[in-house]
Amino acid sequence: MLATDVHCHLLPGLDHGSRNRAESTIMAQALARLGVEDVHVTPHQHRWGIDLSPDEVREHTLTLQAHLDRLRVPLRLHPSAEHYYGEPFLDAVERGTELLSWSAHGDESPAEFVLIELPARDPVIGVEGLAARLAERGLTPVMAHPERVHAVQHDPNRAVRWMEAGWRLQLDLMSLAGTYGRPARRVARWLLAEGHYACAGSDLHRPSQLRDLERAHAQFRALAPLETDA
Ligand SMILES: [Fe+2]
Image 1 (cartoon, rainbow, N blue to C red):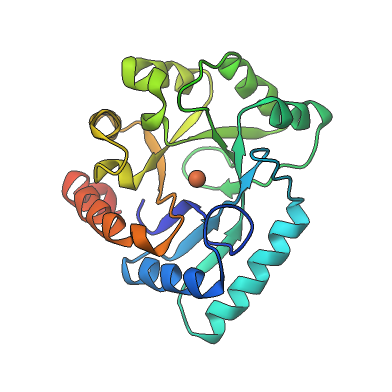
Image 2: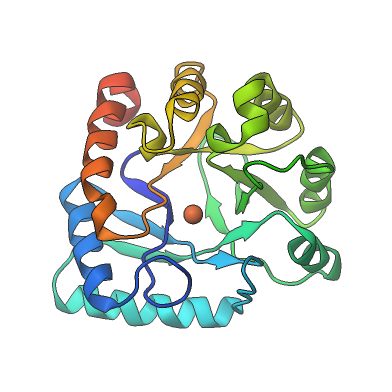
């Protein structure tokens, strides 16, 4: 799970993540040192007025990949996005707009995954229905950091019910390090122990978070040694 980081704001200058190529380089080098091999670059989409086309994200990904290759930073970048669950995103789904996704081929049938962030504080409706709507397009929704959603902190089984409706869950590694407070840490540890996370990501935005991320990787290795070895 640690070799692939499915949630990372590594592309410079597109959202409030990395501000420039120098910051991206520092973060990429640190990720490689931690043993990460594949990074899904996930600029925010449909939030704060950000509306990047998939082609723009692909182009920025290729540019940064070329830069990292020149520096011999051993990371493979994959264009993706962190879609914000709100009206602009739901409209895009209704219109059939292309959504950046990634494919996974394992024991189960091949699937295409889309990363979606729920508002942390506001109540949300229609979460189950969205999974069914995306399934019509062959897409599986992956919920970014559910442990940071207040509704899940109050009732962790809420996340389990969303899984039953077709969602997958993405662990924010830094939740394990306590970066987002004790409730997020408690729920993250519970969901991890129950084996409910399908994937993990750093949600890394800036170099100043790297110390927390190093602690988070260490905690993950201590809590889930079998998965780390896999
Ligand atoms: Fe994020």
